[in-house]
Length: 267
Image 1 (cartoon, rainbow, N blue to C red):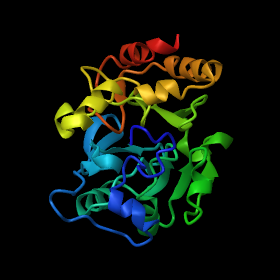
Image 2 (cartoon, rainbow, N blue to C red):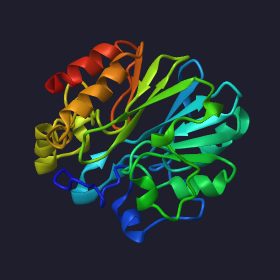
Image 3 (cartoon, one colour):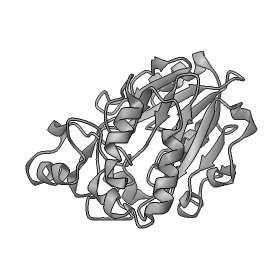
Image 4 (cartoon, rainbow, N blue to C red):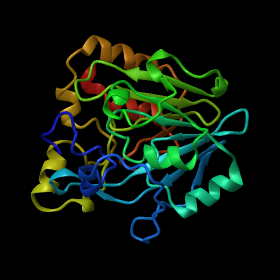
């Protein structure tokens, strides 16, 4: 995983066996207690988080997974970076509101899109750069590079973090809760998940640590620093308080300071 710059075999939220099997079209409700996504819990106004299973990726590296669900002004739900669709999550959605939008925030987070599209066929799926080409089996309704849907009602903003050779990541900002949402550019994988040589590489790559960090592979892959700094400036202009990312614990305060410290290398 750490050495594969296009991460094609990882897809971060993919079990290695599922990735080898190719795109999955049927709805899969994960009922094994070891792989069941948690019932969404509130983070702030109109935003909830649900933890998916810890996944084993290429070379045996283990990652926590997480998705966010946002209630839009029209009372529909936006799902960010969907994890395995579980009975708990499906039941919560039935009680809370219809899924109208699904965001795939980079071309690494896509394994469960087919399941979600099958379960919620009327939902619009919005693709980060590179994903439409990678998943021709998915019906994408828009590309985030072309702008944001009017239906989001100004509640969610987006900056495409450009200049990185691994992925162009869509970083979101949920205004009602002042939450900035990264995917892979920030990580804080719990140290106990990887042992032996994997733990050593995780530390060296800055996947683990006392605070969220930009993994070293993403730093090295920042080939256009001017574009990256421009993207970062747009993110830092948001009045963010809370911070969410896929592979580590969320923060309910201090988001701007955490982001500033994590990207100090880019100054």
